[in-house]
Image 1: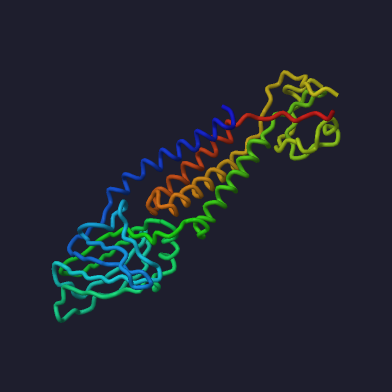
Image 2: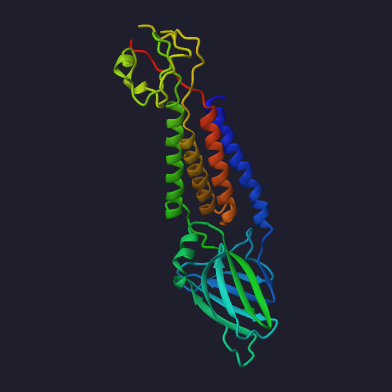
Length: 232
Length: 75
């Protein structure tokens, strides 16, 4: 196998795996069980950006709900049953970013609405929402009378270049290429021309080093076995 | 001095498999981060875990099969 052949295979396998992962994610859309809701996002100037309904349209991986990280989101939601004395949580990639108690709810309220300032998003969510990243946000409410859960895919739809995640990805790939380069150019087969011994040392010993460029030394350390292979 | 080996012993090649593991791991994670930030794939743990695992495995395989080089003699 040649060097370029091996690299092409690596990239091809990666691409195949990642392309295969896309339809799996696309099947996951905005959903809601035991409740329903809708939201409209606005940018920093107050202009409307996007709408989502769960269950319903928008908020899928193919058509994520666009939010402005310095804007607002007007939302309303209702549950099928009166939820009392339970808890709620909001998760991003299985990481809980907000949670709390539902409370006694003595009025028996099943519907609520409000406006959320996206500047108040947790740091981890803001980190996820770099560039055009598509992030799942799940809401869960649990109470003795029933439960509610839903998932919406959101994105900030910003230019990806030079964001921290973009720079991190680029740096990791460049570092990987340096290591691959090292592997390719520092993998040696070396047999001493006079002794016939296989030389695998971390440095070039004086007695063996003559006749070889210092930069072509072999990196390994088993001592040569005089009983095998060596002619002297 | 000639650089031709005079032995019949099968030459061994020192392999950088540990380095291959880390190279593949870093490449896989870096590639997935780029795909995340460009919105090509959704940001979940599954593709990240797959790319890291498969990348590390392919890195080891790559380091195991890459042809060894022979040192150049001094002229």
